[in-house]
Amino acid sequence: MGKTPVRLKEVSYSLSPIHQHAMRGLLKDFSYKSGKRIFDNWVSALFLLVPVYGSYWYSEHYREVEKLHHRD
Image (tube, one colour):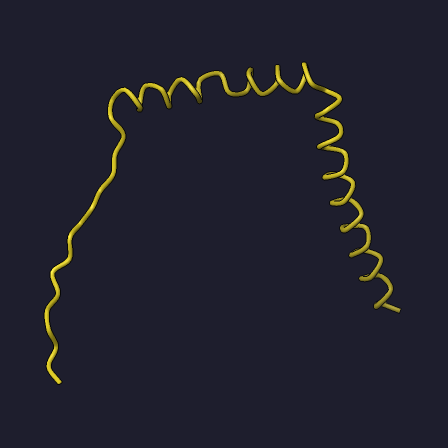
C-alpha cells in the first residue's frame, strides 16, 4: 500500500502585550509577597510545612535505618 502525504497545520499561541504586562506584575516582588503571606498567616503555614517536613524526615530516617539494618 502506498503512503499518502498528509498536510499539517501549525498552531502557535502567544500572549497579547496587555497580558504580558499583567504576568510581569504577578512575578514582581514575589519573595516579598510570599514572605508577607507566610508572616501574616504563620499558624496556617506551620500546619502546612510541619507535616510535609516531618514526613520527609521520617522517610529519610527510615531509609537510613533500613540501610544500616541490611549491613549486618
